[in-house]
Structures are given as structure tokens and as C-alpha cells.
Length: 367
Ligand SMILES: [Cu+2]
Image (cartoon, rainbow, N blue to C red; front, side):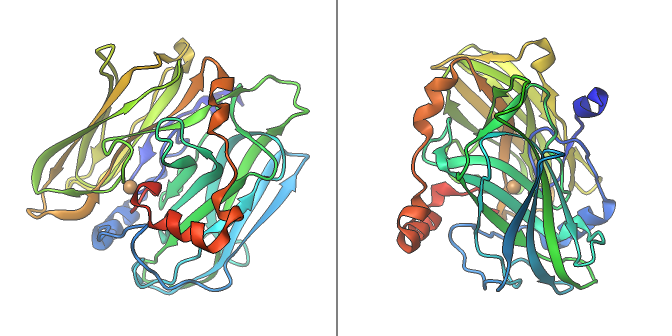
């Protein structure tokens, strides 16, 4: 059991998940299909898609197994349809059903009868806590989970969890497409979330997702020039604490991403991208530090992130790149992060603030 929980493997592929992947689950198929699709400049905050009608989010709490099952659907997925042509689910709200800790996420896609649907039909899904600001970039909401077509798991780290409060509003952005030749009717994105509630006898320490981006606190996507290129950004740490580990999120033609503590002049992690012979991204590795007590960060430290690409297509790829190091941060003093909590904007003034938020370029991890 422990061995399984500690099995932390590579993160995979474009537009996908981030920290602590349990299964690389690389399907050669999906990479070929990604080559066709190519992330053609879609902006989460700027572009308008047709809205898919009737897509709902349901949750079921199983207290016996400590599992919350989220189901998003039904979604109709006609064959060979890009994300721009596909009607997209509106943002949905997952209301946290209990106070406790969220430990892990296991995403998959099924049809109405429960049969598996290829994960590649998921362009990406992102969970944002509307009740909290990000601790590194308070201009953004706290981004607590993300996944792409390879449906990478976010594995449990025993003894640690994400502190969730009953009735917190988690905004769920889902983008779908269908690069395959098969149509799927009534598909559901299903995510099993393991949790512990406050009656848990085992102590759980709070971690916070840390998104350290070459775009600093701005929009994650950027134009990828032809040939070799390098982009760096910095984010400031405002709290003492430790990093438990980091993974990386890059796109096709990635070479590597590094994280350094520029203040302490220390390299924290160098993550080499694994690509196929055409440069399409296969996976990103994960570096973990928790077995040795974590990587210490201090308030005032500047973290420098550098992403290297080699775009062999010979042309600029619009919004083709991202460079994000994603990890879990455990503050020395958890109470210091309490002021990041605030009322959810979208519940207060429904239509207006929703739109304002979506139009602010800084609010989203745009693909
Ligand atoms: Cu991305």
C-alpha cells in the first residue's frame, strides 16, 4: 500500500497535469493526435466558444471509502472536432461537501454505461478555489488541480493534504475536443477525490499547490519562436516553508525546465523533458524532496524559473509554449496563509464579477 502511494512517476504531455503524477499513461496515439491539434492560440479568458447545454457537475460522497466522486457531463463528442468548434461546458461550481483534507485526484472519462472513453478527448480541466488567493500570485485564484488528455493522477503524499472547508466554491473549467475518428455520446469526466475529514485520527499537514511559472504571475501561455529559445521568470516567496517536490508542465518541443532559488543561488530542480523523435512531448519527470525533509524556502526568496525549447517546425507557434514548475508547499506557519481566504466573487455578484474575472488575462492558465 505504502509502496503504491509513494510510486511517483513522470508527468506527461502537453496541457496536462502537473504535480505528482502516479501514472505516466502515455499513449503514443495521443501524441500523434496532439500534433494535428497544436494548441492554436486558444485563450481561456479571451475566446468565446459555443456553450454545451446540459452539462452538470454531480458529486457523491462515500464516507466508507473516504471518496468524493465528481461527475461532469453528459458531453457529446463528435469525431474529428477541434476545441474551437466543440461546444464547451460552462464553468461549473463544485461546492466542497465537508471540512477536511483533499488527498489525491484520479480522473478518467466514461460513457453513459461506464465504459472507458479515451482520455485524449479531454483538452484540459482546471479546478480553482474561488475562496482563496494563490500564495505566490495573489492576483490569481488558488489552482488546486489540473489535468489534460493523459489524465495523470495526482497521487497522495501520506501525512499531507489540501485543507478544504465545507461550502468552498471550486470553479471547474473543462475544455473538450475530439481528435479521434470515433464519436462519443454522453461522455462523463469522472474524478475520484480521496479525502480525510476532521474526525481523522491521523495528523495531516496542510500543503498548498505552488505554480512557479516562466510567465511569473501573468498568463501562462506564450508564443514559441522557431528554433532554440529560452524564457525565464521569477516569483517571490512570502512565507518560510518547504517544497515537498515538483513536477513540470511544458508543451511540445520542450527541452527542460529549471527552478532555482536566485536569492540563495541554489538550483532546486532541473527537469528534462522527454520527447519523441519529432519533438512532441512524452513526459516530464518529477523531483521529490520530502524523504529528506523537503527543500527549504524562505520569505523574501526570489525563485527563478527557466524553460528551454527547441521548436523544429521552422515557424512561430502562437501561444504554443508554457513553462511551469508545479509542486506542493508546506508553510512553517500555516496560520500565515489564512488571510488568503476571502468570499467567493462569483457567488457575491453573479454575472458581472464572473465576466470581469474571465476577462482578466491574469486569472487563467490559458491553453
Ligand atoms: Cu499548458
